[in-house]
Image (cartoon, rainbow, N blue to C red; front, side):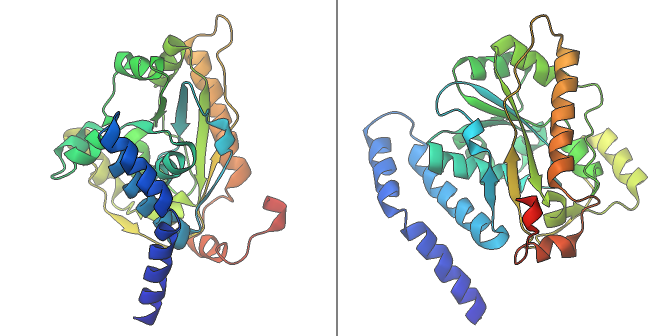
Amino acid sequence: MILILLYFSAFLLYIYQRRKNVYDVLHETLEHRDPWAGGRYLISLVWDAHGYIWHGYDVKGLENLPDNGRCLIIYYHGAIPIDVYYLVARTIIVKGRLIHCVGDRFLEKVPGWRVILEAFDITPGTVSSCIQTLSEDHILSISPGGVREAQFSDHNYQLMWGKRTGFAKVAIGANSPIVPMFSENLREAFRTVSWPQKLWIALYEKLRFPCAPIYGGFPVKMRTHLGKPIYQKPGETPEELAERVREALDKLIQENQKLPGNIFRALLARVYENPKRD
């Protein structure tokens, strides 16, 4: 109970430190513009505090996201994309920008989530709608692996994109740079139960709904890495661009994640990190 109270105290103080920013954002919301801005900022403070306290969360390469203008983030999808939640929160707090997200259609069917999807602009997304979002100079995030990668990748962090090139078509259509994103120890925070995998795959193929159970919530060290922007080359096809992005994201994984992932090692990283990794 004492430990819970201490962490709750840290949580409240983390938010209290930013009380002036809360007032400013709420004041702007009441005056004009986006009616969700104040609510998003308050929620972002909660998520950022959670990430900081529970995972020691931080971001490397946040400067690779533009302060103004368009950008497409392509990321590896964990069992639960909690790193995306943290990055969205950190970007709202630090840059004052919302990362628009492409999410699976099943999210719309989860009771009580519609208001969250609306406030944070999380949509299933088509090629044309994603191009439109980027053309309005927003930041957009897409995981080509989607729910399949979330459910069936593992602590070896395999990318499961198949032959998907839709995100490359979006980047080309909107003339947008692509920023690869990967978060250390994402699979050590939450994992899926792999056995019996054939059953989970069969259920997913039939229902198009994630059925494999998830376990975890471990307070492992988590750090998001944002790579250098990737720009389309003259005459480059969507397939060629998609392959370059895949290679860049895979390199980001290889450079920043000791494979295979290990829960105990990821927990230990909260108190000790190899200086060679910095």
